[in-house]
Length: 486
Image 1 (cartoon, rainbow, N blue to C red):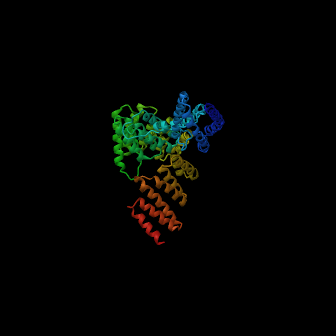
Image 2 (tube, rainbow, N blue to C red):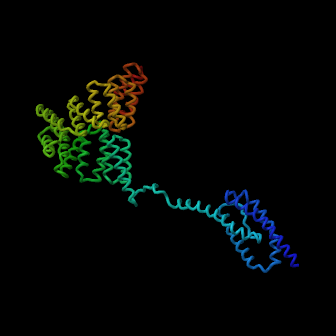
Image 3 (cartoon, rainbow, N blue to C red):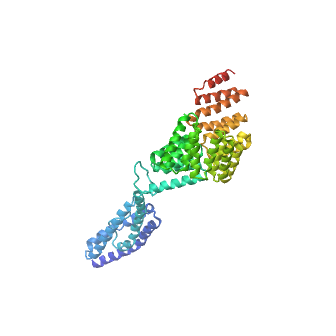
């Protein structure tokens, strides 16, 4: 019997040794190429064939308790590997609890390769879980109310710097977006609002500038500069408003600025302007200008205003001297432009043109300088150069109503009615409520032009557009009726 058992045992060992390389080759293919599904069938066959022999050996050879323990250990490890494979989303598994006795030792040395694969799969999934818990740093959510981090302050400062740089390079669309973003981040910080007010003033968008400066005064009621800025805007011509009331309020704003800072020369100059525009040409107005000059002896704009006042009072000699002084003291671009505007108000277009050309040599894209130069050239009849200058003005400041209307008026003077209509349509896109009547006048002029050359359908269209802007003007309705009869 013993001989038979020994023979059977020897046969079994040989059989296992033959099968082991075949089984191990199947495992290596799966681990290296990661094609678990394609190799699972082969490994199943190889593992199921020795089951019968395993049963016989358990009955006939009870001595090998240590071997049984190793079998249990290998079985336990295989189960763990099997469970790890299920976690790594493989549908079919090759590991089972019942394994051949002799091949168990070698399979233990190979099984960690499968375990490593399942661990690697887990490691690949782990960063995804971490990423879902930690949002990216740039996803900052802005909520209404008080900011919870210091990032808001940094974002605000960046927006202000961006707005300032864009304004300096005359990229007004970018500057407006930057200041508006800063205002949204910190609505109660006046710097963004001042920035918008200055931006609108550059483009002569007076109504928007007025709103910005009024808001600035709400935030800083004791800031004299805010009152001076608002006083300046209120003295600008805005069609459709009560000019007298605006000039009176401008005077009050200047007086308030003087109360807040009695040594501010700009406040005194603005006080003189508001009084002069109300028709007050007395010594009181002159005193305001002279006080500004006393506080700032190189104040070119105050000399220009004084020259205008003296001319209005008939003191031509003194007026000319003041104008010359203003021109001589105009060293920076803003001063040149402001003095040129005063000169144009007195029909001194040639002198203003010289100053404006000088300013544009320094700042070629300043929209106000381009506008006033275009106006001076139009007045002198230099239509071609005026067109080029005004076209550049609307390119730099695409939301400037005054530049569009002046260019449209230029085309009307040249009887280029189609071009005039095209430009005025662009003005229509940016017109404010108070400027609608002025735009209606420009359209009316174009309609008259079409009527004069017999383009009645075009005239009807233009008159209808003008009526939508000024419904109270009966003359427009009469012109429309006549055109419809043609």
